[in-house]
Image (cartoon, rainbow, N blue to C red; front, side):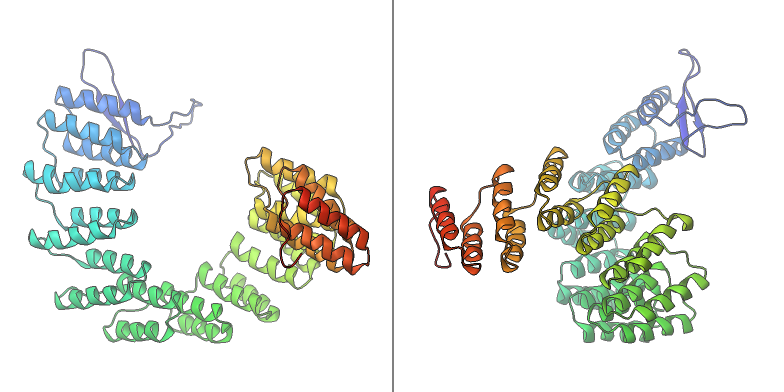
Length: 478
């Protein structure tokens, strides 16, 4: 990594290159972090002195880009030109990357079409590709397509990267007809599609449920001698597993291995999730064991799939065995892990254990999300501990999180009233008011219906009067 430092005020600064962002040696010196502001200032001074080489400029541009500072990068670029140092395509390319990375593709377009030609540096296909990709990332499809046509008019022929970028963006926008049009144009122009091109089309069709079209593209891909990669097979497996066809997905998994492609963590996760969703726990654990035998280390997402599958099946001993063994495998539980375990214990009514896991996740620095709080609040309401439920709602607000909405309480009250626990449902009305939420007609209708079910007509009448006092008009259901 480049580091700029000046020796004395009278001599030009010298550019020092370092391989890493921190300095360390056998002696104990305090670590020094590369400072983009200091490097920018020193680089500018070097440019003024005339001692900054083009290679040094390349290094500085790369570092400013890596630190996400295109503002300084462009300012340095301007000062660089004033010194008379020639800016080549590499320098321009780095500047374009920085601007597009900062979602300033319009400025990158100005550099591409005006600054570069004005300084005698003709933009090449890489420069055009950078800005086209930048516009697509910002969702400015029209500008990207206009630039695509502009480059051809300027005599710059689109390459496989250009076409693949356009096709990928159109597939993500579900504009499959247009994507196919560009594929045909690509072939007609003599540009050979690659894995990236075909994978974009397969993903576009498979993710929108068009299995036959995805298979058609796959057949075209292989007929053109473009070898499918692991990502290609993963997309087909994803489609099959989402549609309850994990056995067929397993066939693709085996085909991939037979063709010499090694399934990756994503491949295993897709099939594991497919088995888990369909309740094929034996197949799931057999596949997981095969994964570990093949030397593929499971990540947090993979282990979360197993924990969730066991928890949903009521097999908490198995789920907790995996949970407790995560750290031994060098994997730290994340918010999804804790959310799954806490929800499962809440459903079992084991609120003490659920709160223990909640406190554990906080102690481990894992921030609870709304799903975690909702599971706990719902369970405490269901079990009549409204004091704890109020505490958790207050805690959510103090952390800047939105508390549960009125529909959340509808479902809890409906379940309580159906079970004849109308008094506890009435307590939820008090909770709603306490947390500053305005009850709606459905809240009162549920209570009236609940009291009628337990033949407490006088209480039902009082609830009706309360509803009217809130200024609410009775509905047909009421």
